[in-house]
Amino acid sequence: MSELDETTRRKYLEEMGITVWSSRALQAGDAPDEVPAEKGVTETVQKEMRTLPVSNATVESPDNPFPEPLPMEAFTDDFSFVPAEMHLPADDGVAASSPASIPAGGDTWEGLLDEISHCERCHLCKTRNRIVPGVGDQDADWLFVGEGPGFHEDQQGEPFVGRSGQLLDSMMAAMHMKRGDRVYIANVVKCRASNEFGKDRQPTEEEAAFCMPYLERQINLIKPKIMVALGKTAACALLNTGREVTLGSLRNKRHVFRVAGREIPLIVTYHPSYLLRTPGGKKQAWQDLCAAMDIVDAEMKKED
Image (cartoon, rainbow, N blue to C red; front, side):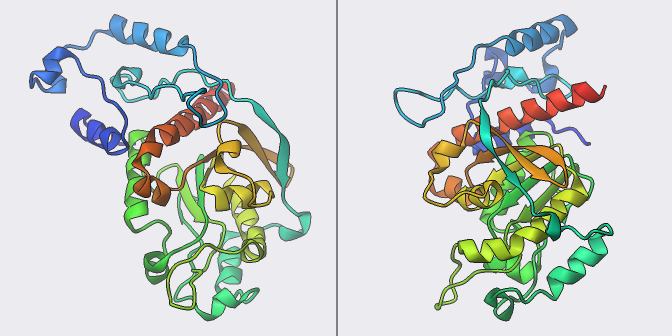
């Protein structure tokens, strides 16, 4: 994966509303690469970041403030992420796929995409311009799941291509990732949901239920190390819960999604479109992503 230069990286983090800490030398105008890097200093920062205490807050309220976002010093010179430990409470409930949704004789991307392209399970097939199954690395470690395509996605056949997609790309860049590289992006619903005036709307629970078998098969084919639900609609579909729950009650927990006998960690965070409307939520979203990175980091260490 190509490295980001310091200036670009700071730009991405600042766009997300994350406080960037700089030395006085950098604030005075010196280029980041002019600051001598000492191995001992980097190792000390890594060790200190691993032992920072982190709040176990689970409710968005003044009495339980979220931990401050990680400073730039939490990143090493080669941009390998060193997040503080996130002791997330485990969720008692797990989402499980229906065994009947995965073909007994095995599954293939070609067969799955062909089924989606000819799907007529609900009325959305009558108004769609293009199906939007997903995009990215089919052997990805990371799977981001949104609710469904909007107008621009319906035109291009790719998820998250508008302003929300630009913000999602910035979020991934701040995590040293990019679209198509170790990442797959999908939606619960594969066709655009629109109202009588042709405007984007939230997919109904019924529409989401019709499409869930397709998403389950995608998950089974990808076998990601981590899943990130973007927004309440996606989270409720993946966790098989009613929409009367609040997003806040689903955040700050390590959920589990079960498919074909596998258990995949699942983190819930805000949808990028919400963050565009409510920039103050970007710090909480970054906290969620830090938790997800901790989980992946731990899984990678187990494999070593």
